[in-house]
Length: 268
Image (cartoon, rainbow, N blue to C red):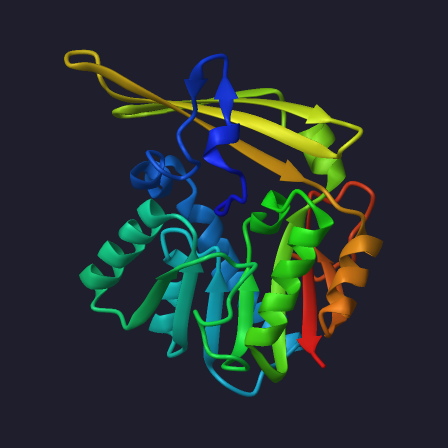
């Protein structure tokens, strides 16, 4: 989960506004366990590329967050650009890039509107992972993401993206979860709306210690699930031909209890 299209002014509980997602949470993101997902995607990506090769080594990572996947690809010899709408997350990515002396370009921007941010037809691979696309809570926004990715891909280039399934959001996400580590406690409370296939999660974090006290912050994260047929149709409308759908981190087709589907689509 790395990108939001929500207006922070809409995220209110009574008279108390919530912070924009991935704002205060950004410095805690990697150490709260989220780093592991990018490491898994990095390994899985090469499994997918063996079955769906690309000709070049120019990569665009959309909803790049703190930049872990982008930096790993750069270390493998890719020419990498990362785009994210959160300034706080990109600040973390920039710091990591400087520490690693990595040549990665990070850009703050909206993955629905990439024109003018990145070169048209300038990439051989475009990625968008960690259910970032689920944050698109309308078909129009999801389709805009696909169209923008298609515009950034060179002919024959590959789009690799994942989406959480309805089964996961409705049955597997859970209503409440608590994570604790030194100096940080995180509480997640989720509710699924069956009519809209949308899960709304309130993330509450407490930063500090028993001696000095804790600072609290609250963020709202909202994800919508889409039928496979809808995603396929929107990809086709964007000029992206679906080559495969996989049950996350495998090469198996999705099943009724799949939690995350990876789409592999090629620029026509």
